[in-house]
Length: 210
Ligand code: C5P
Image 1 (cartoon, rainbow, N blue to C red):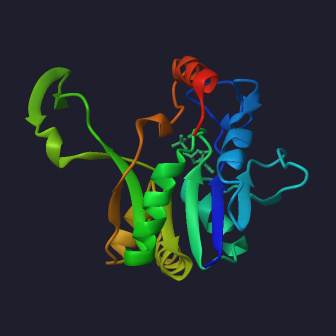
Image 2: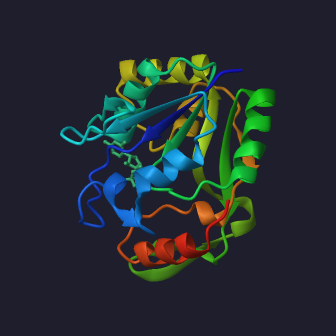
Image 3: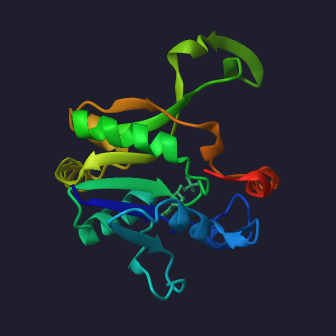
């Protein structure tokens, strides 16, 4: 079964404020290079990059205004029967977690990595401590997410036609009415989002072996 990895790497990295995240350096390599190495086993790799940031020697597409639009552009270029959508903001790709995900997508057709919520989860109500939500029923959703390409393509086309935007692809497929398996992720696949995450990533890069 041919597998295409689709890297959404076209974000502007606003919250960190040092240009597109794909080109931030951690442990002497860009986040993009970390992700590319993590998926070097894939049959096909396609990367969505911001305008003006194309990279030689790679199959690339232009990113869209939103993450969903970037993934739509990636899907148009993908040829695999299974697609793995991954955010470049998660540079550390844990092989065992990806293997679990691949097993699930073969069985279910759609699957995502997710991790438990380690902290107490509370609703903020006017800056006060509001309702506590029982964390055991909640998961933090990670990428990669894996789909049979035909299912994800149908979901994207339908959402586009109706002008609906989601923050991840699992939501799109669920909205289409297709089940999405939740697969145990790995906390090392955290999303580099805030400036302080760079120090965490730098530390992990020093001891990294997937
Ligand atoms: O901004 P955020 O961290 O939620 O973005 C998640 C991922 O989506 C990042 O890897 C980012 O590069 C990507 N993205 C994209 N195209 C956009 C916006 C975000 O590929 N227009």
